[in-house]
Image (cartoon, rainbow, N blue to C red; front, side, top):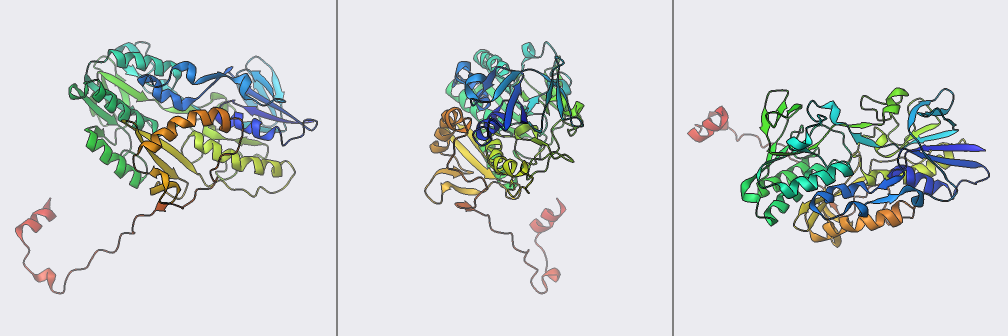
Length: 439
């Protein structure tokens, strides 16, 4: 009997066992999944809890009912992986042997990385987040008490899971303030270590324009050193200061601690893998999927979905001693809620940045890429049902695994700068041109 052991029963781990169980004969393969919680959370729902769109019970289900029959489920905490003996050691002393191991333990906020964020008094001094259900509920209560002032949304550093979520919160809270008559008495500031609103040029330009339209101040290139709770302000390494009355921060994200203890991780405990096959470096029996892997793309549910599509076919070949033919292209797509019942959509991969256009059909859409409309918003809300009933059970979605250029519009390539007219260098220049050069 061969043993497949999956660590983590979040999005990627659950999809893996549900997809593989029907494909691996039960008299040949034992499949076990281990997680430290008996609950499964629909994490994209955390964003909506502070605004009352979702109640906690709408985004949490018992794990037992989501995993395929024929898969052994264990609730335990992993201490480390011994790749030399092919064993996983649990904190309670139990040892689990494996022939193939999949690490899908995700990434998680680590406020202790930033001075001030993990202080026991931080929440009562106006510091909040929404990257756990507990934090999202506390933020919901804080917003209900908020009467105006300086509201700051802060991204501490990348990578984080769902990298557009801080942007979404900024747009949603700005709309929420308008609806409650608090916008005129509230200064909204978005503080980021990036040089713009997003990492990709076209998306950064579009999102930056949306910030300007909504009067959201952008504070770029802000490398956070500490949160000064006494003065209620953010302090950067170059000594800039951003004061706040209510801070909504996204802390540094780290992978599971056992990844580092096992010698499998990068500096943030994300598993070092081949970005196309998810096979861990220098190993042929350990894979990492979803947010647990150090893939150079977004840590998002869509990436986990597309990655599992590639992984399943490759895994079946790999365990038969065959070459893995499928290669993941880094495909990711994500909705960005922009408030007032609208959203935009990004679709990109390792090599292609988010572009404008329509999705999934050219011209018809109905979803818009890098543009707001109601269909995008409805698509984001509908995804909760799709997640529970289609994605997690491993049923096929009508979306191509590899990113398609259908419906996308590339911006025109910048042409060469026009050269000077003959003799232009000798012509007198107007004073305004001289001023432009000197500034």
